[in-house]
Length: 230
Image (cartoon, rainbow, N blue to C red; front, side, top):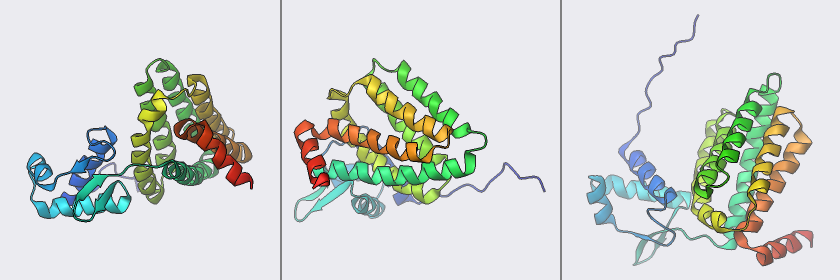
């Protein structure tokens, strides 16, 4: 029987749609870290009642993107150095799982590795534009998890990517060499293409550690490494 290209449409609830729009606004910097979200204002801008809006905001609170402060309201999360380290630690675990699945399933033709190398080429083309480079950077990691075809990994990674986007403005202003940043992605893609599991583990760990080092600063990064060594 031939597989049909016609599939049932996925119906989203109103709270899910609202949550997605607020999440995108946070990602895009419209609501910056520490910004308070006024319920009445948001309901008016979105053209929705407060019931589904509250449910959507509760979802984002559970994801860690919003923080509820008693008697004050809801605020966009602000990340400490420890939070940033933990975000990248969690991303390493999720992306490692996705990459290992890709190697297991795709090692015979290497299509995923080739696609990821194509995104690396886009990063090289955007090397002089920090914002465009960051978009390609995120696109690389999203593609890697998406191509593993694991809905649960993708769902977890989606929240982590939103948190990462909230940090990227700092990374764009850091002294993270463009060549080093691009080389890290190429190394991951090549390890997937070569089905080289040991190199994949090293490449992912080195790439994430490098990003954290540039985000939290040399002194904090040194302290993190000293703690890990003790």
